Length: 261
Ligand SMILES: [Zn+2]
Image 1 (spheres, protein in one colour):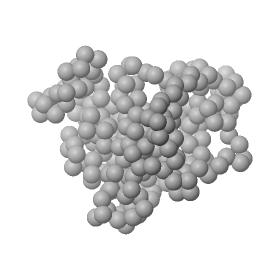
Image 2 (cartoon, rainbow, N blue to C red):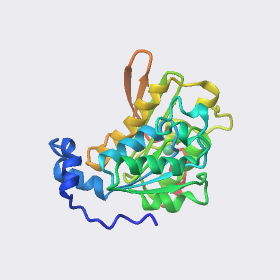
Image 3 (cartoon, protein in one colour):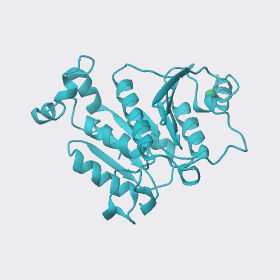
Image 4 (spheres, protein in one colour):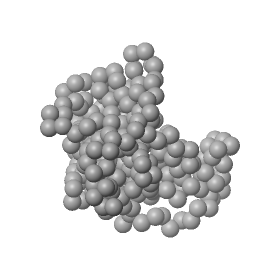
């Protein structure tokens, strides 16, 4: 389970046709497309962010995708979780998502995990992945994913969206001085429960932010990392701001790192 696909990096004639519009880009080419084929991405959360992120990663030819979610599809999800349709209501999201992605691209490996991400089960999945996408909707899970990715030096691409505001940021934990999610949002006992369920969200914003997560992942695999920059998007004005992020020497990941030296 979760091994790299045994298919080598070579692209079949069919794959060369499927991905032709990417292969013709100078900074992708055959080499870049082969790198996508050899990559393994873990996506945690198959909701509003996970839907577009997963669909673009699958259609772009990422060779192995592991997705994790323990929810079932509900009617109120369909406004923004665009992978799911009426016939998926009541089904486990992970399994329904895997079927949708397999129907989109049958050349790739998809592993569906119908479990809630927790301290006990997450590390082995992260360890097998080249990149992790955090598409969850609450602070507690985001801090946990951040800590484990930091500990295992696995790049993390985190996004969030509520109301009309969204942000996305890539943390390349292969770099020892990379800041982390906690450097951006210090952990407090009174962190708000600011998810879509209680604040609302305009549907296409999830498409924008989830697509940007997929884009950052592909750029990272191409070696064109834009790490430690917070990209904020305002869905009312369509304006985007970019803010460089520095490491907080006192966050829990930094303290852990120092303790291990
Ligand atoms: Zn930090």
